[in-house]
Length: 252
Image 1: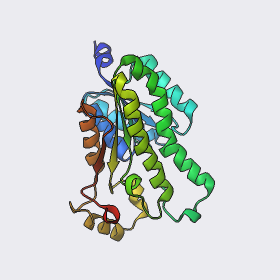
Image 2: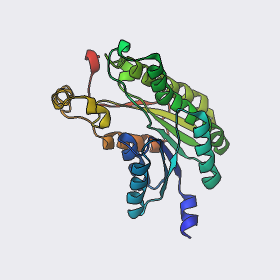
Image 3: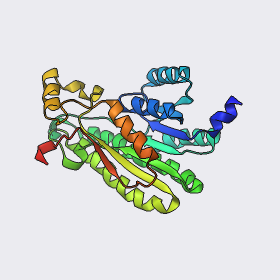
Image 4: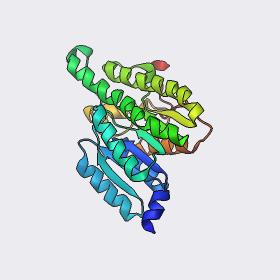
């Protein structure tokens, strides 16, 4: 009976699902009634611990390895999910890395690595779930962008470019997939208090909070709340939702 119940649940796949924003998204979806597949790369122990915690709360979830930078790895993971569940209702692309510093501080290989994860990962996962969602004539894809993808950020040029690509791709795929009943959306977080901010001093974090009209840094839960809202908002597609506390980079 329990197995039948799990098979009837909507299936959500979260890349980078064990760390920072991804962990909050995985938890929110699991608590909302999704069978949540937590995809991880280097965070296996975090993924296992998160799933143990969620199962203790009565949620249905599992963890699975996938290197989003590698198409074959993504195809393998999605193939395993479809073999077991026969469908994927929701894909949330949270996997990403950041690089701080002048453009000349990084090598071409480092730029390509960042682009391959932040944008290539979104391409790979979307390409992998595309046929199944079209066959279902339903599905939702939510990509995590960034406010820097809209405005650009000094000393984060390639990161900004990668997130700008995610935003543009989300809008384009929304138009492409809408006739098949598939919605594609993008959440653009502002300054969120995750390990990505570890490169900033406490004084710099305080300055960022002070520059935010709501007077604080965002939390992973703030982003997870937005993801859950978009997952449920059935008449929204192509939407780029800023979750930034009113932060206006460079006075825009």
